[in-house]
Image (tube, rainbow, N blue to C red; front, side, top):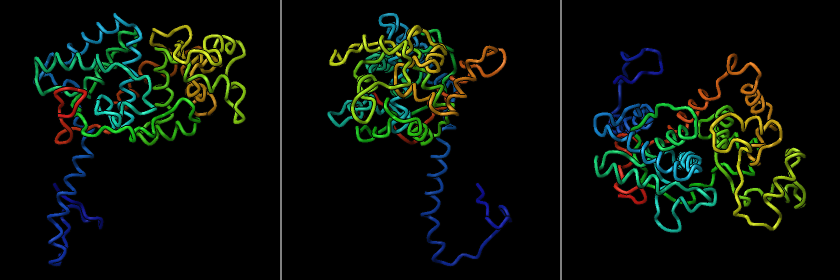
Length: 346
């Protein structure tokens, strides 16, 4: 490997080093090598990573997910959400799966309601029986999300694999998770910190097209939206507000659930984008996508009367965004481990 000089002489350049400069070389080279490995970590993921070492990896995960979704149709949304929450804290490394007491990451306020851990563990148990110490829990989470989307009639896609499991799990690390009451600017900033664009924000938010939410997350939007603690979010359509209040009455059951994408909660499609544009968004964070001209224009691009014959494909663009998200902060090579049990470090 050549180290290029900044003077334009390329690999043929040379310097006359003093002795004190030479003694730094043993320290500099390891740092350069470490930086090289970190920079290459995403590039080490590849489709079919387990084709030789554990060819049954993907079929096993697919079968486990299929059984789980047939038993509980809402599990498709659960597994998709689990992937998102895992990737946004410490990268896509299975850190959310660890159960190491009250300080474990899964106990963070931002992860309230996240489920699907048992499905991941069932897939892991089967893979440990056939390919011990080979398939990471982080990869199982990513594969399960893909298979869940397919079970909800969404697009199939290839998942680059080769992630290793992280060695850290702490609830304090989840402080920057996107929240339902974040402003549009805060949402954009949080996504940008993860290398994601406004387009990714819209597309990944559209994953709310499947699944339900609890009235707990609706109380502020319906009854305490303004600083003085009164009123509803004016972005809610007057034709939709009475229905939301009926499903989540004031001082009612905060655990009662309602569809996030009214009219299409079990089918993966772009229906939610139309709901957002027309004031029928259930989650406040989804509604905020209509507040910003850039995110609003992205929504409109998928709802054109000529789409998808002319214009972007929602399904194809969503696949690009979720594959991109699945490469946030991945550990590969010498970093991390392959857990024997997904809920515990080795």
